[in-house]
Image 1 (cartoon, rainbow, N blue to C red):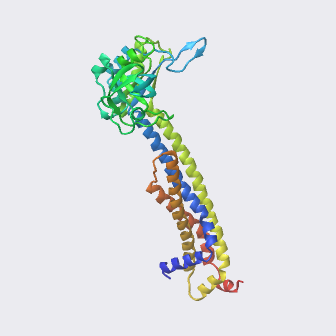
Image 2 (cartoon, one colour; image 1 turned 30 degrees about the vertical axis):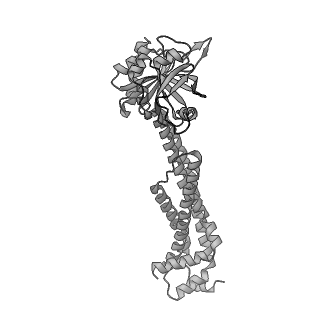
Image 3 (cartoon, one colour; image 1 turned 90 degrees about the vertical axis):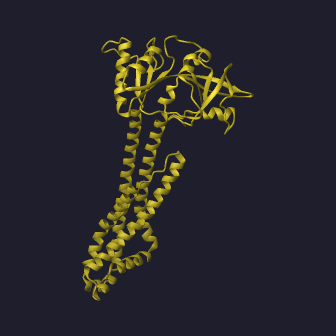
Length: 410
């Protein structure tokens, strides 16, 4: 008997009990679907985390001021000004591992243009800020170093601010917008940046030079101290950890901190935060994949159980086939092909189900849909191995039946 005839007989045998075949394959369907869906969701979540951190900036470090201590109550980092403008200049000019550094002074203000107004965040910074944050302009050109030094009344608007002040699709470059009561000329519109990991809209922001911010927006000045944070871009991805170490050492020396004395600042590495987030997602994905693998094994046990029942039900059929010349290996091959066909059909249906579930969840959570072909092939291969592995015992039992006893079976 050739292989094609064996496959045809196997499919015919499975179709005789359609409901039982579907129920038997259900474990395989669920297992394969779960493997594909969970791996796709995990990869999508990791890609989403990486995309968020990439949108914040590349090779980026955040330097925060120190924490306050009043009456035994300690505030978090940033609650006590400890970074000076001279510290910022030293970071920019004295460390080879640093490519650029820029301050972020932040406040809330009402912006108005004509009869329209909008409350948003106003950030005082320097041109390097957009380099550090990897933030290009969609329209116009960002303000220059001379604008920052002279305190020019120029502003860069985020897309959300533009949409609410001027309407979607409007080019506001050259228009005048009032921040509080001071007129500023719009010189650029920043490209869309999206949201932060905590849901902050990066595009709902207006950017002005630091000197203009301190004169027109900031309610009180701290003189030599920076009332915000400092963003730093390392010279390369491989030098981020070195830049973090260099900044820490430089600031400790400038702040005259003794050995063993706690830092009065904090240098945070976004690459480490992203790595931690991705590691958590990877661990969860592996856990879910392990659960899915258990489902595949359970499905294989179901196949073995049903195949044993099938051998019992078809004992006379086996006896007749052996009596007319079928060899034991033909009987073995037929039942193995039936188990393999059942598991492969279940695997294909599970792959389609897993891809569908992954697409629905990706759309729900706004993650990229990442179904890896190698994972699909691995899941199908594993389902085939389950079918053969758990179908082998019933097939061997069928091939070893005594034809005389089989013909007498009622």
